[in-house]
Length: 130
Image 1: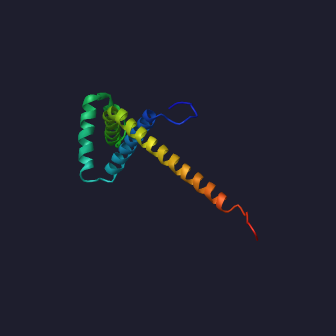
Image 2 (image 1 turned 180 degrees about the vertical axis):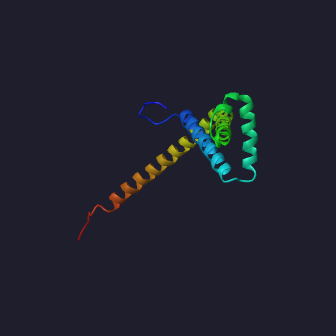
Image 3 (image 1 turned 30 degrees about the vertical axis):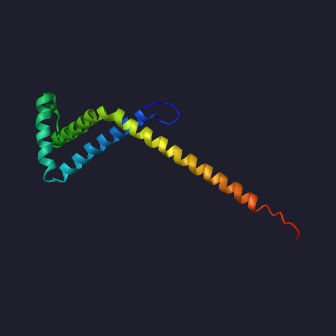
């Protein structure tokens, strides 16, 4: 989304995940309709009918797969529009998970530093009286 080289903010990460899920849902609906999955195919034909009512210009597009393609795109767009409302909540979940991960890494780093320091101190090859 941006040209920055730093890590994404939790909000951008949430929008990215919502976008990816929406695209995958569209592709999944299209593939399911091509394979004639029993529940999805009639549902997509119904969505296609509503999409053609909403945008009559779709009727002018040539091709046998256009209604299913339009319905799959409508499913993906609808999923994106309705799930983008939850992007702030999803961003807060990512932020909390990120903070928890940072705290775990900090604790682990401190533990490993202490272990290494103790190991060096205990094995410094200093011998008395040998």
